[in-house]
Image 1 (cartoon, rainbow, N blue to C red):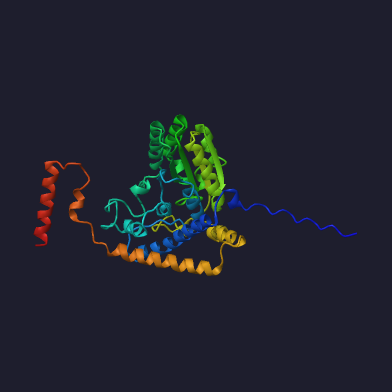
Image 2: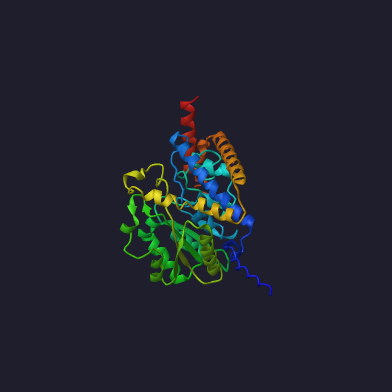
Amino acid sequence: MSKKKRAKPARSTPEHKKLGLSPADLQRMYRFMSLSRLLDDRMMKLQRQGRIGFYGTASGEEAAVVGSAFALGESDWVFPALRQGVAALMRGMPLEVFVAQCIGNAMDVAKGRQMPVHYSYRSANFVSWSSCIATQLPHAVGMAYAAKYKGDKAIALAYLGDGATSEGDFHVAMNFAGVLQAPVVFFCQNNQWAISVPLKQQTAAPSLAVKAQGYGFEGVQVDGNDVLKVYAASRKAVEKARAGGGPTFIEAVTYRLGSHSSSDDPTRYRPAGEMEKWEAKDPIVRFRRYLQSHALWDSTVEDALQQELGDLINAAVQQAEAAPPLPVDSLFADVYAVPPPRLEKQLRQHMDALKAQHP
């Protein structure tokens, strides 16, 4: 008698296929995560060289930003915090404009009126944020409620850090969203530190996600260093909001590998060994291993991507730095649709004073 062949164990469906993501989608995610990391390194060097004044990195949090932003539609709105600049690039903001915003010259769409890293890009529905923590959250709820009122299917994605959950605007926005069932997704990048204050000194709650229950809607916690898990949670929340199911609060547990900003020294407050523990969970390395395990990546492709992105960043920096300063009269622009006589008089006086100084 012939021996029966043993049946091969069924291979489980890869996570990206369960989510309906193509290899091209995965490679695009990885591309933007890598771009974010390289940009952080280059922009911090520019700051140290005195070529820009300030910068805040997203290093270690790339999966949280890219995975969440990837779930949005073109008509949706983004209300960012400090570390979501790459989401603007994902939605079409040119790289040279991204760099110019940190310089504040004629290529800066905000005309030098914002701090560096406070990006805004109207055609991408990407709204400038304020350094006053959490103020973007009520704005996001207001936009979302307006969309609901008008019958518009656009939703708002409101980013925040763990420190923002201690601000009054957070609680106002959460309450407003829950009562009005606004189509908004609150996405919290819990990177463990609100500048130098650790999470355990921010809240006595078992998680940040649980706070949503007090406002009458769902809160979920997700591994913020797993881009596919972030995308899955974000897509579900976005679809729920768009379908009229109301808000969701997502807590993405991640870690800030660098300083809070270029003005910060994390070695003064973070315990020894903590960063090394989280470096082992690097979201880019983790995702690269996933791609390699499904034959979607290799060292040759990686080297080519790093070279390509480096060249793009170099070109963007050169183009942005070549832009001229803003004209002096831009100080008086955009205040009124029709400038009143007193403002026109002030402009003439200012220009006359400049001519007298530099005949």
